[in-house]
Every structure is written in C-alpha cells, then in structure tokens.
Length: 385
Image (cartoon, rainbow, N blue to C red; front, side, top):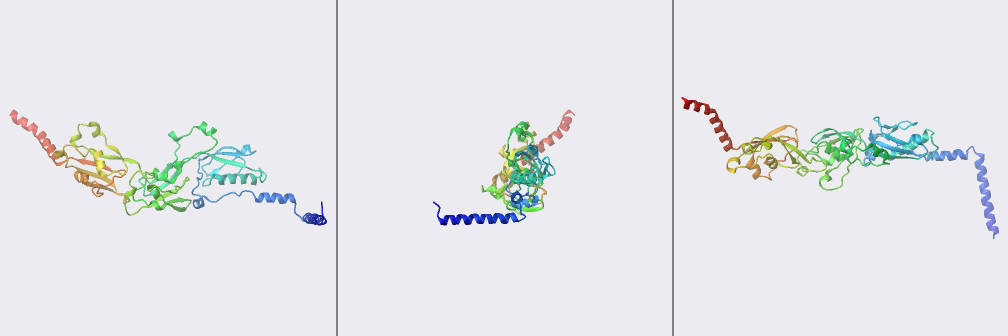
C-alpha cells in the first residue's frame, strides 16, 4: 500500500533524475566519449624504467636478458602470438608493433608493456587487449667478475651446451617454465673459480648500468639465508678483499672450489718401482687441504724411517694478497709433527706446486754410487794393466 509520504518521496526522486539528465544534455559532454576516456585512464602504463634503476627495486626478480625464449599468447591476436626470443639489441620484436625494451625487465613488466602497445597502436580497443607471456628457456649470459676470486674475468653462466641443452621438440611442446639456477650471484663466484680466503663477503658489489649495490653472502658458510640475486647479461661483480686470511672460508662450499689439481715433482728413490706413480705429475685434492696432505698425496711421506725420514719439500704458491709467486722450503718431519701450525703446515691453494727432495742418507748413498760409476772405467783399466 502506498502512503502519501511514499508517493511524495518517489515524485521527488523522479524530478531530481529529470533535472540531472537535463543538465547533462545541455553540456558539450558525450556519454560515449566519457566512457572511452574512463577506459583509457584504466589502461596499463608501459614500464620503461631504465635497466640501471631496476637494481634497486627488483633485484629479487629474474629479469630478462638477450637470448631468452618466450611464449606469447594474445587473445584474438594470432599475428602477435608465438615463440619469440629477446634480440641482441635487448628488445622484443613482435609483428606489427614497435620494438619493446625487454632486457632488465621482468615477465610481468613486459606483459604490461605489450598490452599497452596493442592498445596504443590502435590494434585493440581499450579494455579488450589481453596477453600472456611465459618463459620457455633462460639463455646463457656473460658477466664480469673481479676482485678476490681465483680466476677473475668474464664468466659464462647458464651454459646450455652438452647435457644442459634441451630437446627442441620439447621446447615447442612445453607450455612454459624454466628455472635458471645458474644465473645467480653465487654461480658467478663459482664460475670465477671461487672466492679467495681474503674476500669480503659482506660487501660484494653488483654493478648494473652504472649503479652499484652491495650484497652479503657470508651466510653461505653459516647456513643462514642469503640474498642470492639473479643476474642479467652485462652485470659486473666486484669482490672486495680484506688484509687478512679468513680460515673459515677455506673449505668446499657453494662459492669456493670443491677441489683442485696439485702439481708435484717427486723423484724419490723409494718409489722408483711404481712407474705409474712416478710419471703422474698431478693429484686431485679437496679445497681446504694443507701441506701435510699434499706431501702424502705426492708420496713424500713414508718409506724406511732411518733412511727416508729426513726429507725436504719446496712449495711454490701465489701470495693471496700480492699475487706474486713465492717459494718456500719445508722440512717434511716438521710439517708432519706440527700439523696444526698454519706456519709450518699452510693451506694449499689452487695453482700451487710441490717438489720433494731425498733425505740426507739417500743423497749420500746416491752420491757415492755416482762416484763409483765414474771410477769404474779407471778401475777396470788398472786391473787390465
């Protein structure tokens, strides 16, 4: 039942609606144009932030590099869909569109830029452009590593050659997905043959587009969480050095060498019967091994104690601070007797070489044998006369 009060309220509302409609019609605003402008205002804005600035805001995302393979799907846009690769110029080239900057951007950013480009080029109406970009394969990247590492220089990460190369048929059938575990900061240090024991892991510098940011990877040795940032092509890594050796870093880890080849020379008489041992000139030892283990690996320890115990060894190594080659002579019995003394029993480093010398008794015996061999012709001649 309608009351006089309800009727009055309904009439008032109708009059107000007619008044507003009339005011709108008297203006120059077209309702269709207003709707279009509203839709345009809600379009995604292309993210064209310079690559250098992304080091501060999105270093935790996996960013694109030249060679990355992408699958693009555009609804009702077959000419824009397919499998594409980021070009060497750092841009993504999609048919009928201007080149889209891709290097240093995330998949999400590139997808937003593609949608905005489809609308801005007039190929789709605002609000109707929908696109999906998925990674198919992360490409190898070249980066530079310098500072307190064993082999500074250019490093190739995420190499797809050999066993890591994917079946091209699988690439076509695969919808999306690839995990570039070897495109992270820790692998860059590993690729440079590992850090030196003088490395300052709390201030490792990542330089991208002229902008630098420090990262702390010291947690690798303590089992703590670390910010293992993903890298892009052209990144520069600088590992600062300290004026001291950090013994806790001299062991196999994710950012140190697991082991290395120790070059040695051992012409000792007690092992002359083992031809294969004498001919072999290198042995694989674990990183963190000390001189005592190197002496044993080179067969410089053992044999007849009274004859072969008093031996000497020469260690040729590169100074971790100056990079200069140094030679030092050690007494084998002293090294074995003082195994915990880092002065008498130092840590071995990649590139070290070791030479062992016979004991005093063996040297005297060999000297006498040499003299006897030289005198034998004269003795025989005297007997004949």
